[in-house]
Amino acid sequence: MRMFPKTAAALLCMLFLAASLSGCSSGEKRIVRIGHNQATDHPTNVALLAFEEYIEGELGDRYEVEVYPSELLGSQTDMVQLTQTGAIDFCVASNSILETFSKDYTLFNLPYLFVSSEAYHQAMDDPEITGPIFESTRQAGFQAVTWIDAGTRNFYTVNTPIESPADLKGLKIRVQQSPTNVAMMSLLGGSATPMGFGEVYTALQSKVIDGAENNELALTSNGHGDVCKFYSYDMHQMIPDILIGNCGFLDSLSPEERAVFEEGFRMVNTVERQEWGKAVEAAKDRAANQQGVTFLYPEVQPFQDICTPMHRDLLEDYPDLAPIYEGIQAWNAACAE
Ligand code: GCU
Image (cartoon, rainbow, N blue to C red):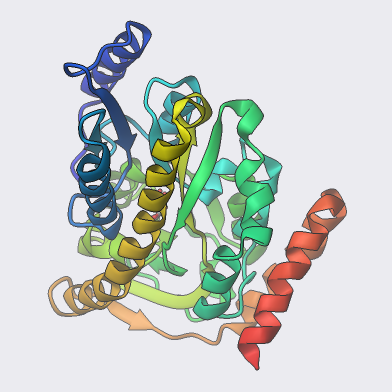
């Protein structure tokens, strides 16, 4: 993944901050800025471009949407902070990093929380499950407006096939900057190395880390499969990405405008999901046939047995999350039938 130089990103951000403070607009139009960390061929970018087209089609006399991919505006943590202050209006953040802004988000980061993709989708589409969590950061200045599928996370390494948890022992594995992911990695025996997504390729190449964990698109869209030759389906997490918006901006919309934006948020979710399945298949094909990645299918149960005590620990620490956790279990049961 090619990164924008940090100084240039900082300059852009200062420009935005100055622009928002001075109420700068293009003519009479309000510019709506959205940042994310994926490449332009990624389903997230495709979905946000559909959002841009839709909003400008409906409200083009008042709003102009600008989508900034590839960490142009900094890391996800930087972008969440820019969204909090209103320097930008929206960004896509992994649910993982949101747990440092609200403990409620910790729930969706639990390993082996959902029994299948179907249960994951049903639960994430259920407003009784996501509603309270999506609202939980309002006091911090932002809220979630929709979720985005990011598939299933699995381990991949430069040269160690992971067939069982024992194979992770002693390996330095990059994880996202979230206490849950660090705890999961430690339980599984690897050495957790938290860092931002944009730093992973260089860390793999320079052997600062032995591997990482992510969905299949990291191999191709981010080039990790050029360095890592084993991808192992232990299926440890289904962590959604979350589109978050600045509350000041959302609250400034008229009811009519808000309805259009809400339709646009639904569109982000559906377009991305339509693109996701195709993108994963294409990534697997390219990784196997052009990058020389071997896909492994280890027994999942030993990984799961080590991780599931984390569910009990979370509910002990945060008993108020229990009703939502039970709601997820109900979807798990319904989808298992
Ligand atoms: C996925 C996810 C991103 C996240 C990244 C990571 O690509 O979609 O939101 O930043 O994983 O591992 O950091």
